[in-house]
Image (cartoon, rainbow, N blue to C red):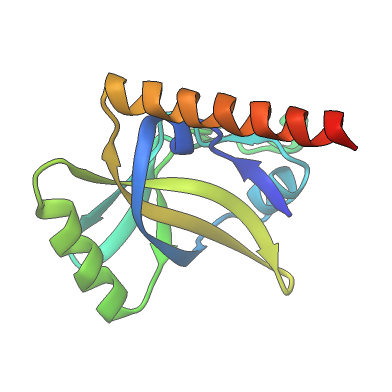
Length: 148
């Protein structure tokens, strides 16, 4: 079960490949994420200097009174990946038209993981096709329910 989701990913992008990464957080940020106080809207991943960073994700403080004065909710957070995964992401990121976005943050055996995906933006006509397919599936399901 995802603690934080980026719901617009499937609508705005065509997913090419997925990766699972650890995320480097402070203690209060871990509590805030487990409480669902975060947003992945507009966030993306950049690979620089052999490391991957989550840029644009916001994690609101767990207890506003107990957070440090210089706490930045939208700071860049390092993602923990293997060297081969980092190399693959760097090559994918350098290709024209591809970007890396976070899909969800979730628990996996007491650790927080981020699902990231290499994506290509959908055009307007692709989104229309998605709507048509969804409506056709709904009509079929209504017909099946009506028969029984």
